[in-house]
Length: 115
Ligand code: AMP
Ligand code: ZN
Picture: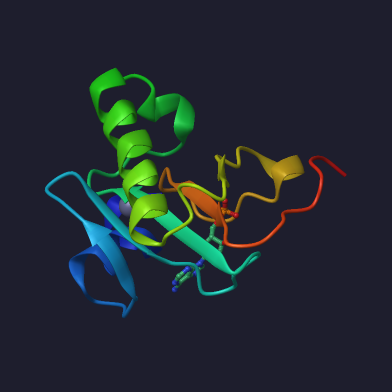
């Protein structure tokens, strides 16, 4: 998929509305439209990368995504109570959007991990 067809590139460009939680020169962080917990924010690098593996090709950018996730947790007031970082990759993980993104989940007791 090219960047011009990409949902998250369109959200970052402001062509599709979103509720921003935190942003800087590198990332844009907004509320997930179908939240899986009380706090569910997506941390999206402004640069289009297909997935987490491709993102890891730029370790500095990957670190900035993780630091932004921690900043989102602080802004949302869940840094003390705890939160989960998730990168979905491939069909078994129900991946739907092919612009690398980190899910930040929390704000309540999360369910166990896996199935
Ligand atoms: P993934 O399944 O890991 O690719 O995650 C994609 C996420 O994007 C899902 O949790 C969707 O609910 C979310 N999503 C899809 N469209 C939008 C949108 N327009 N605004 C905010 N979140 C969205
Ligand atoms: Zn994109």
